Length: 54
Image 1 (cartoon, rainbow, N blue to C red):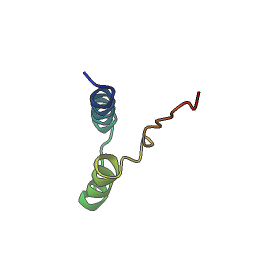
Image 2: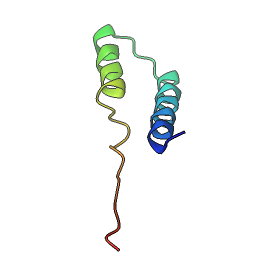
Image 3: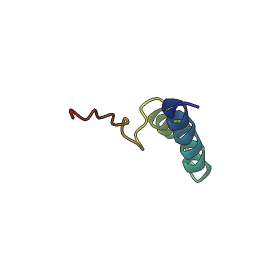
């Protein structure tokens, strides 16, 4: 398993965990929240990959 696959699996599990606690009554607001969670990934930043110069 690569690090990047592990990263995407952890994020998918966390997204599902967060969505389990969200209940949005309005359909448009629910679509906005779903879009923000899935496509924009607002709950987590992009991963940081650093290379040491030494």
